[in-house]
Image (cartoon, rainbow, N blue to C red; front, side, top):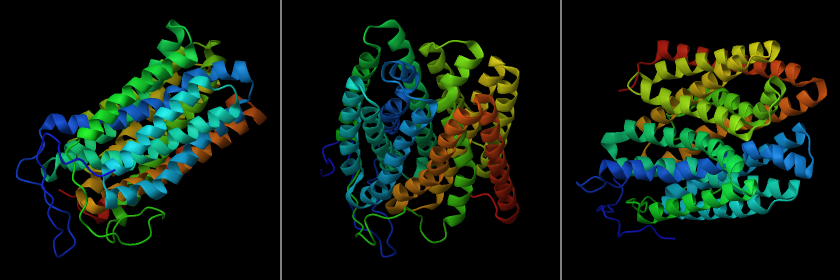
Length: 421
């Protein structure tokens, strides 16, 4: 689908410069409210990404599957996401943001229908796969669209809103699902009917979004492992070093959190499970607003420390059966992901040209979601084999080590390279 040229804000296509730079927007930038609205499709899709989390206990009772199978269902989301990232960033940079976002929202709507009618593990896997594909599209094309709408002079705001849209949606999904499924009839149907309405509003926002069609000629393969232009590898490495452990920590809380709560509290309340995920991602959202004006590498260092402390708290919680410490672990994990994500996106927004930005965003997320898919699956099966307490402990120690390494990489870089403006 071609990019809309009837948006309320005038945007003029101009040819790329001799150096291959991006086309320039007109002198009238989009109003700030459009920058916020451009982030809504990211939020809407990420609400779906975790909406199923509190409902798995219902499907487990209805269908019958183990914690290991549960993490496999979660992993198919990662498979879809990573497969999407191999394509969506490049296609978005070449054909336009809407060309990627509208089909992605269509897949998200289809996932809602499958979730609402699921009666087998296979159906849950397909729904999670479609969800992952949609999420891969919005973390590349959707986040880049926010930057496009913001323009050159609001890149820090764009990075902040794109990142917060992701984590706020990821947290709102399980809370919304938990509350609706406990208070309204048809717990596995009502949730996704509401989400379909939210996605419909996101479609309308994308249709009217004031973004231009790229003018730069296509170069290279259309399907490839996403990367960054020559000279931007350091920024990508720093982002992945902290973002990957952070998002892996939140992933294990999402996949095993209900089981941990059941073991510690003896409760299967979907509201409690959803609320814990919500406060985790609320911490991820709030911390980004709190640290947004700090140097980027300081944000990344703090993110690595937060993830490390979250794993210390997780080990303490499972060995002492302490719910408050488990919640503290979730809050620290959310803060670690939030700062790692904001720092990484901000570095890329600052240094990567617009015609490669969606691909760069995809590269950051590939680096983050690979361990976020593999380690929780391993933790799930390990917990089935040796018990939840020992399985969570092994996972936490491994992830703590990765967070320490990420922090050391950032500290070493700060000594060598001056902080970018």
